[in-house]
Amino acid sequence: MSHSEIPTVRPLRVPVTLVVGGSDRLIGLVSEAAISAQLLVAECCPSDAATTAAEMRPLVLVLPRDVYESDREGFDSLARDVRSRILVADDDLLDPIELEAQLAILMGEAESARPSWTGELG
Image (cartoon, rainbow, N blue to C red; front, side):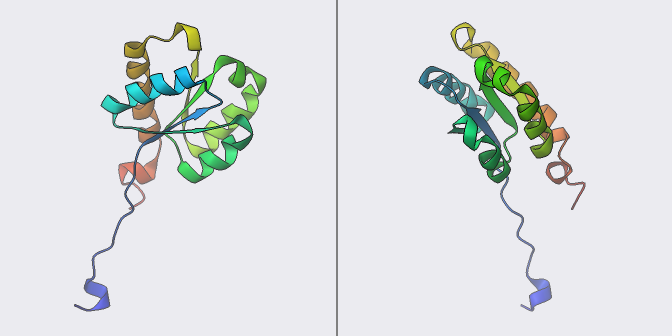
């Protein structure tokens, strides 16, 4: 087989949601919801959010309300940069079924905004 006949290997795209500054309860709820949405869940502290998001390219950033409110403009900018959607979570008010539905909707929106996921970039 010549070099030109070797098929191009496309990188495996694993959908990720990134929990930034979340409590153990929030991480657990997101992890449960991610099972049916087939998402990998990663977590980081707010100070590592930009680096972790740039490396992992999450479809959804999940932030507790207090973390999001501490730097709303910065997180909005980060989400635009990595083409993610933001889910602001009130830790004590989360319903697992609603969380799962919100993740699925936001994941779909983020995927459709990424040409490399839709095949438009080849």
